[in-house]
Length: 126
Image (tube, rainbow, N blue to C red):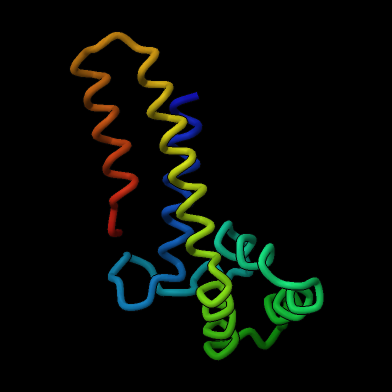
């Protein structure tokens, strides 16, 4: 369970980076959007709006003319509707679950190293 929770938290952090303006995260902002990927921050924003607004954003995402303006519109939608906060909360939940799994292991340098890995995933900047 530790590895699954850690892996999901790592992926959520990567998804959050896709909406992180002004950060050097190793990939262009909105790359997932341009690939039309629906990630957790976008799902979190969808949960905060009515079905009409969600349908409009989904249509924009499917549009064949998804350009820089469309990408920015979707990024802004996620930021305004607290999709990043939602994803960060879920990431924290998975990290906490992984940390609880570690407590089932005997104290050892390996367990300490795995705990440090959890800290790294939670705090990574790129």
